[in-house]
Length: 374
Image 1: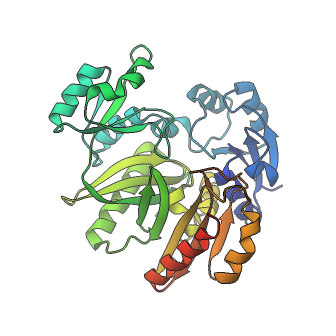
Image 2: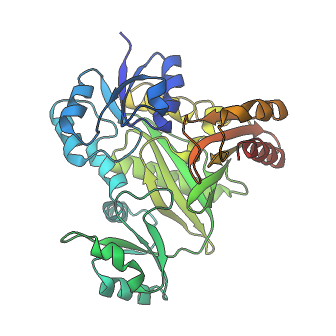
Image 3: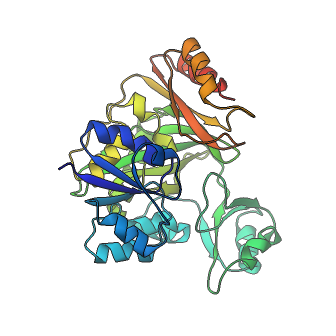
């Protein structure tokens, strides 16, 4: 019988695990919130990932549980572990991807470089942090934020008053240094249950309106020291938190030559989509290998450059399907991946990968192919 891997969450990340699962002989099953995306293609149960009975019933038919997102409650995760279910990454690791305040405190214990930060419970504490930071800071909700949501740049404490009003007793917001970065980077590391670990090349990410728009692998003009530091940070975090599967570490490269950790994701990540077509082993196959405790695959690039461009929004009043023929005809070197989502302004509905030996050519082709779906 094939190893059965259960993925909680039916989004595009689960969808993109299906093909590599088939290729390496894994029986992939998905617990989806609704019919759609991964549910169109995999053996699927539909239910609420926050409901313990639902998740327990799903877990009975699989050998290991992993995730499309980090939102499964800790009490559900820990109940599964207590039941003897293999959960990867486990709750002890996943808590640091779920709660940014917990993440900052743990990274400080590990000695990982990160922005100045503080837990702030009210506007008075936030104002003191602002004063210490020269009048500007980034404020984040500790839980639930993604793609720019739950993040604000503030220059007066009152600008976060609505978020303070929504806090429960004893809860706090996360205030961070407004980092003077010159670019954003991402470091991915795969870690197997037994501790085997491999790193991917550090990449440059381009954000627009808080959403990842493009990724270039490897990061252009990355000095050897930067590459070493980024990989060292990724390995330290993966080992220190006990991560199993793919770990993505979002980084800032600052104008004063610091490399600082921004955020973490313990699953396949947008910054690693390039690896589907640009690395010997793509991140989706690698994640499955790691959580199933199979030997990890090589992470070397297949070409000098890989470029990923997200398809954001999609056509207004149309479908992605009708654009495929023109994009394929004009850009046969581009690999187009779609998520089965309805177009909506700002929504990630797919991405384009292009690999090659000339960076400018790869960027041009990836952008031009993605433009067919605008």
